[in-house]
Image (tube, rainbow, N blue to C red):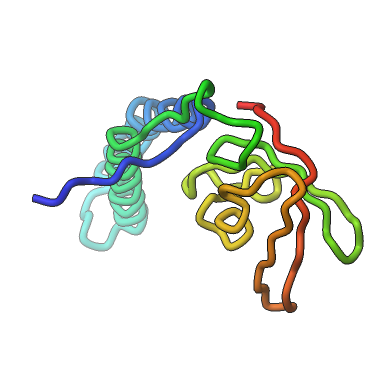
Length: 161
């Protein structure tokens, strides 16, 4: 039997996944069960579009529940006390400056399941995230991107989780 890898998550992410799972189990399952019950009342289910749609939705939700249960079982909450400010690691908030334009960005390095670049949460497995891991303030990273080689300088490393 293969050993399952742990999945790094923030405390916020863990709570979010728990809440989503609880919502799916209690609210969404109940709503779909009611839709199935109502669709059965229409009679012959062999040609009942409402019934087929509800059953399809039910299968999708059950799949989501299984995925969330698996994620939560394997989750390892990032320990705030282990986050360093002298080196970029999972949970660090990093300010970087584009070496060409001097434009600055701030990212929090999170596990791939929580990545949300729009909200400044960058996966440690993304090209930029992977290049940042282990870097110290002042170091420059180079990342190959579709638009060419990007260079970023690490300006600051903070603890924000």
